[in-house]
Amino acid sequence: MADSTSSIRDLLYDSEAEAVGEFRGIAGPYWSLRPVCGGQEWEAAPENVRLADTTERLHAAITRANARSRGEVL
Image (cartoon, rainbow, N blue to C red; front, top):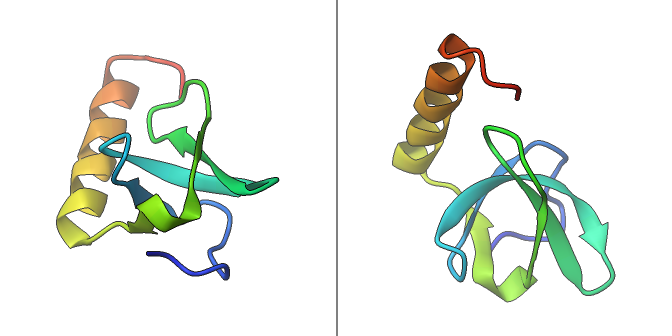
């Protein structure tokens, strides 16, 4: 589980959504995460969130680079 000192843009893994997202802030009892390639934010329960590990961060960076090379809006 990530702690409450997470910073904006930290990459976090949401075990319920099985997805990596950028931390965007706290909305009530939930944390707001944004997909690494853009899109609609989702809310995650803090107990389901942890810092993304090295492999997950690398995968997110590659996904973002591929989307950028295709000209998709980030």
